[in-house]
Length: 161
Image (cartoon, rainbow, N blue to C red; front, side, top):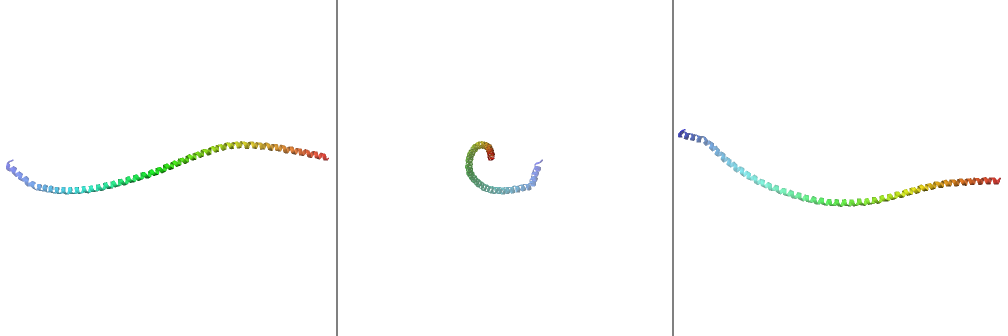
């Protein structure tokens, strides 16, 4: 290629690419403006997010403080309830021990009374035997008295005749 051809080709390329360059420059100008707009929005959003983050952090801190206070109050409440329960359980255990002692005493007395009843039962059985013997003896005496009365009547009847 000759230098005139090269020169003509350069001019042709420049003429053809000129409008493209203008479009590219316009795009760059628009892109710059968009970047400025995006940067402004990003900064604005960052500020708003920082504000919201700070507000959210304060709310979280307040919630944590309220929860901690609530937990401490619950812990104190449960401590009081636990102490009351311990006292009640101790009182219940002492009452149970006292009842156990009373039951043991009553059991000893019942065992002692069982022995006495057994002894009384033996004595009643002996007395019943004695009563039966007395009844048998009484019948023998009644029979003997009747026999004597019968003989006396017989003797009296003979003596009258």
